[in-house]
Amino acid sequence: MQAAAETAAPAPPQLEPWQVDFSTIYRSGQFDHLWYAARYPDVGLTDLSPLEHYVKYGARLGRQPRPDFPGTPDEAVDGTYVNPFAAWLRQQGDASSA
Image 1 (cartoon, rainbow, N blue to C red):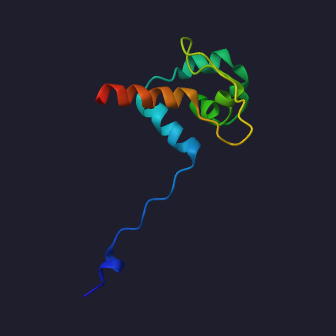
Image 2: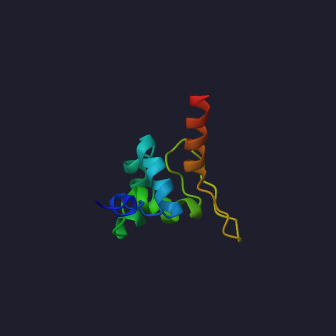
């Protein structure tokens, strides 16, 4: 008979903060992929999807994820930057579940 520790499933890998934001935004369906790529044509010069570009670079540059959501550049110098669109989506989810 095997010990419980041997049969337990391994813990899932810890996600990077950008991956959590990517997942939040992707699952919401509220990111405008076509608009973002057209608005910021340099995204097409990378091998990243528009959403991955936004989460990794665009949000910190103050780029908009869709036409009606303002972009705010990253001014945090201490590593405390929070993606504003992902934070807003999480807040909307919290408000709708209350």
